[in-house]
Image (tube, rainbow, N blue to C red; front, side):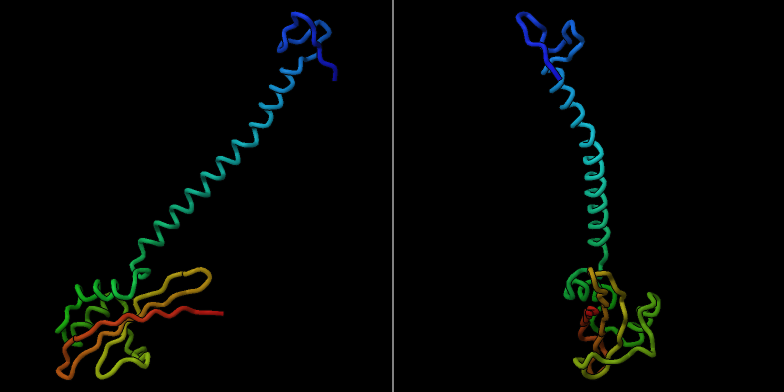
Length: 153
């Protein structure tokens, strides 16, 4: 492609031969390069938005808190000194208590109630959250212990 360069020629307007000037050609290239950027920005914004939503949902799951924080939350619901019947009633209302799933993790001593609080996805594995309400010899709640287990390959 030939470009018209001459004395007094308008570098943007075509010359008399109908040819485009160098500046017009470069300007057209810049405009054509901008078109693919818009979809990229849109997709990038969508991905960032999706990540934010996933982060908020994940952070709002109380089972993702530390074991200590979960135990403190449960202690507000089942205060120390509660009876096993009160704890079982509370756990049954939330479908955490299963009479057939009262096995120990090997760390419990004496009387206890086991509850399955739930699970959550911790990429690429599932994490299960279990609570042990432990009672003293007079059948009063003395400790709430959380046990998290994660599946592995």
